[in-house]
Length: 159
Image (cartoon, rainbow, N blue to C red):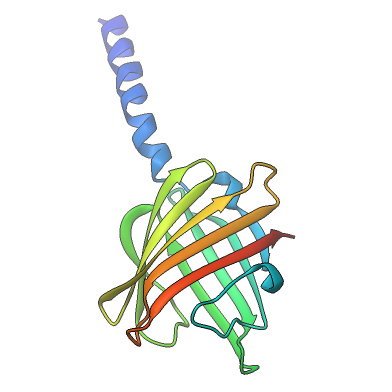
């Protein structure tokens, strides 16, 4: 009987592991990332003057994002949010308008999120980490809250 229970437990763990790992933050994304404005393109612009993103683990295998920067007009910005990479909305504290993001893990080197502003889907962003782990590139497309097309490629260097 003990061996049957042991086999069943191991079997359940093997089935559940892929489901758990896909909802976890990709470990390669953790750390501090500084926006490389020179390598980034913003359409429409303008680009922020500076931006630094800190990504750290959060309880429940999620990730906490803390984003600080200076926008194009010289105003300091600060945003925080926690996501579980489960496709469920997470509120972005500090956004100009009510903003939600639903994150999903793609693989060990990337994730994507769908952004909603005032309840309306605006953009989808795909984030990938380079093979050497030194660069994070976000490609965001869609329509901004103002109705204009968005096509941004933002490049971040690991600090």
